[in-house]
Length: 512
Image (tube, rainbow, N blue to C red):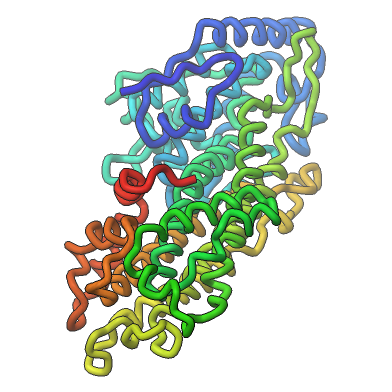
């Protein structure tokens, strides 16, 4: 098991993935503990001086002008957590909650939140003990960050609320802490607010989505190349000199991948010099790098935004090194909401163009001498006809999900929070779009493999051979119809996993 050390300078995207998906052990660096001690001493000084400071000696949101007596300030923090843990719906996935908790630890460890080190350590202890709070899917507007989801995490630190059981069931937090040998903590002034005022939920989802999209966009080049090969398409539109004259970096990378993937193919050799061959392929074939490449460039932008947020102080108020405590709007999730919406649009289009290639592969009038629906005995058999229906339905859903959440602000908290980001909703639906893209590319992979099998005895490219080998056990050889759902699930597993890409790269070198 690897170890992630949280420094006062922050953590990396790889650290988030290691904890969220790899169950890495988490430790606080001594320098991070020192930063929190220094920050806390400033809050203690404010309390001693009796100065009115938002969230320390006042209420929250629309109650910001309500003074809270010193003897009730700890009560205030506990009440804040209980009242804000107001989410509803199915629980968020374990990996999202773990990412969110680590990112809150990161934020506290920057030394601008005024909390005691024991608060951050309590979150670390939950992660290391594999105690995952039950965080409902609905509750965040991405305004003062992810208030409700983070409150559900913080409530577990108090020995209240729920956690995820081994089978995803709801378990009482107090029982889970006892079983893990952990003790609830009591909050002091400012600490409840510091636990919930952040963009950690939407940032965690965005970082996970960036990793998933990076893999899927590379695999989109693979499935596009296989489909083009199966349809006797041309490799000439992917020549590097044609993309140098339109210097979008993602387009050049995608084109280079597709061109490389189409080399050493007897299928391609069979028609390269055929004068009857189509002068121009359809857009879904010829323009694959332009669409997938634009998605890659979008992903680069999103990765930049997520990277900036990963080193940001996101809290309110913040404790500055010179002793000032200042209110900010840094918790507003607009940068992340815009980024999530933008990436969802791009990913939806990568899936949409893949579905168009699937449709072309199955259509006897357009697939260049392959049988209808890729069935050797079409009529009695339907081949992959309904697999394309499934793909079309997913494309339609992704188009609905690509509508931006970030333009959907609703005012809250007595008009104090009168513009919200909806970043949580944007990041959540982005995850669905990417999951759907996995399925769409799996259908293209299956159709392309079936098309290449039907080109026998012509030997496909190394990528084609690797794909046929990876799916051969589930798909078998072209023949009578079989129960197709398990084959599609197998194709999805191959597409989502690392092994097919690794097998291809062993033969042709690394993909861009």
